[in-house]
Structures are given as structure tokens and as C-alpha cells.
Image (tube, rainbow, N blue to C red):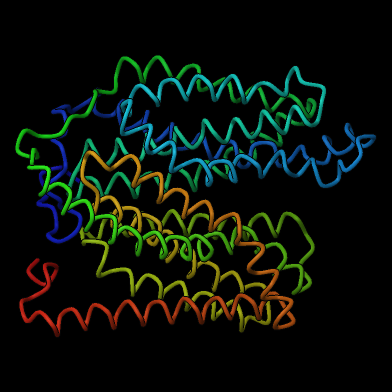
Length: 422
């Protein structure tokens, strides 16, 4: 989609966006590639070693509590990212996006490869927590820079591309981890060294963003605008927390749902999960091509997710379950870039780092509690499918609430909503 397409009115166009550095051709392609590659590093940390956890379990079988501690090696980076992203955001705004990104990318390689030489399970888990610290900085910086470099429809396009790359890379990294793990459980940790190749390219290629001269305001104007932005961001972060639970339900629970229907073949389960993952990518592509502002789309997107959950709840066989998962994942593929774009549009340049950090905390916090929510739902209603149905009902209620809120705003203000002028 060419950059000359006029951006849609409403939230995705904000007066505080600094000008993008005028680049095109290979330079522009390299910049986008580096931002997308950096955005995939936290995904690498989340899935790469999943296939070798059983081998790690066997290696540390003599360590007390190993059965509970070994899985922490996989999940603790996401928890650290969720807890530390707001602090990373504050640092981003104070020391600069590019500088922190380069430093964090180097540290990511050092912490990520540490298990190659560590013999203590506790030491490995500690190094994995430090990987999460680096991931918090990397993800916050990359997303903030996308918001800095681009505005309007181009920002929507690249935030959707970020979702697509993250979804596709998860499958690639899982396969890569499994292949490397066949040579030993430590071997996949070598892959973390790839960030050492990214750091010098980021240092020499990515420009330092700066606010426009006409963004300068009086302190009173700045304070008034910022208080409004934070108030609006709180609502988006709450939606994002719930949206993350919706987003991760199919990837986390699909194999269990299929098992409940009698499907035990791992190849079939893997194929079904891959089809759903492809639907997520398709949803992100659809969102980018719609060329619409995100806020008015959120009720419809949540409704699509709810319909998918409803089909999954009613499914009595595997094909119908997969159909429901595909519908849901089309919705979640649109949901993530819609929420992120909406959050970005509410942030001034000076606040974009910490605002992005808060958004990351909401998203990864929702990811972390997703299995716990569904486990509690399963205990309450008696089945995992029933818990998915309850989550679908909640998504439908959120969609109805958002739609009603937009109607109420339109009734109070008789002027047409910005998106109606498109």
C-alpha cells in the first residue's frame, strides 16, 4: 500500500507525530526489516526452547522441584516483560529509543546464550528472567519507533505487519527449536546470538526520531493534553488486557480442545494449530487493507472473536472446531493491531515510550493469565469448551458495550464522527 494514500481521519492521525525521515527503496526496506526482526525477538524467547523442555527435565531430574522449575525457563521471560515494560518505556523517553534498542539487543544475545555455559538450573532461570528484561526494552523500542517514524495509514500498515511477523515467526521458531534440539537441549540457545548481527545494523541504519518544531507547546497546554492522553490510554490498556486473553486462547488451548474431541494425533493437532495461526496473519492483512481508523472497528472485531468462540463451544467434531478457531483468529489478527494503533494515536511524542510500555504490560499480562482464566472457567462450568463459550459471551458483551458507547457519543455530539467523513 503506497505511502501516498491519504490517511483516514480520526484517531490514527495525531498532531504529535514527528515527521518520518524521508527514505525510500533499500534504505526504507532495511529500516522496516530491522524493526520487524527486533519485534520478533521476544517471540523467539517465548517459543524457541519449548521443544527441548522434556530434555531439560531429564537433565535436571535430580534437582529438587525441577518439574515445576524447568517450565519457568520458558515462561519467566514473558512475566518479566509484562512487569518491566512500563519502566522500559520511561527509560525509552529519557535516554532515547535507538540507543536503548541497540544496547538491549546486545544484552539479549548475552543473556540468551548464557545457558550454554550455566550448569545450575537456578542460574538458567535467572538468565531467562534477564532475557525478559532485554525483551521489554526491545519490544517497547521497536513499537515506539514505528509510532515515531510513521503516521496515518502507514502506521496502521506497519503495526499490522508487526502482528503478522510475530504470528508467523512463532511457527518458524518452534520448528527451528525442535530441529536444533535434536542435537542437545543446549543447542537452541545458540540462536539467541542472532541479535548480535542486528545490533550494528540498528546502530548505523535507524535514524534518531525527533519531535516537529510545531509540536512545541506551552507547559500548560502540554500538561492538559497529557492528562487527557493518560485517561484515554487507561481504557485502551484495559481493553488490551482482555484482548490478550482472547488473542491467546486458541494458541494455548487448541490442542486440549481437540484432545477432548478424541483427536490425539500430534500431526493433526499441529496442522489445526497452523491453520488457525495462518488465519491470524490473514486478519492482520485484512486490517491493514481496510484503511480505516481503529476505534470504530473495535466493536465489530470483538464480535468476530465472539462468534468464533461460539462456534468452538458448539463444535461436536474437529472440523467444526477448526472452523470456529479460524473465525476467531481472523478477529484476533485484526484485534491486536487495532488496539495498538488506537493506543499509539493517543500518545504525544514525549510520552510514546512510557505509553507503549504500559500497553505492553497490559498485553503480556493478559497473555500470562490466559491459561489461568480458562482453568478457572473450566472448573466453574465443567468443561474447557464451556469456558471458551463463557469467554465468547464476555467478548460479545464488550463488543456491545463499545458499540453503545460510540452511539452515545454520537447522540451527545450531533456533529458527524470523524470516520463518517471518510
